[in-house]
Image (cartoon, rainbow over all chains, first blue to last red; front, side, top):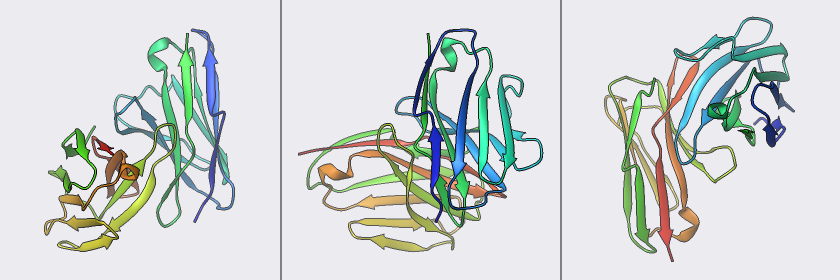
Length: 112
Length: 109
């Protein structure tokens, strides 16, 4: 399997600031990582597929300039929420495919 | 785009009762997975079904994949409070995975 770690677990920021969330694959070299967004008691919505060394593939309706994804190495993908607003408050989860999907612990973002 | 619809969306039952959760789609998937998620944590894989008509059992949980590989069901026998959580189905399409709308289950002691 794969151990996936996200950081930070919780983040609170002021409206207009940018927040970076890290997703690390600790024991598996992941060429592909997935970023999801989840609202309370709702399902996971795929935001984008992060590809190591190339541009991320974004799902329809997800703003590329708003949610910047960088996958600079086989063990790290980052999601940066730029100019965050209260409506961006959500639970963000990353996952790695290693025979099955392994998920990080999730990062809860609250924008004041 | 949400490709998989789950029903019911919310379910509250007494301990010991049986229940079934459905996952339906108009799309064909190469495989379908079921996950359980606790609040504030990432989903944990319960099972993967690959073959149309496949049935898998995991203790009190029975999973079935539709013959056309468009739908699936999860049946829990004699539910326990520890079964409480958000149940998610996910379909594999190419190298991407799309999650169902989710079923929030509460088992009352």
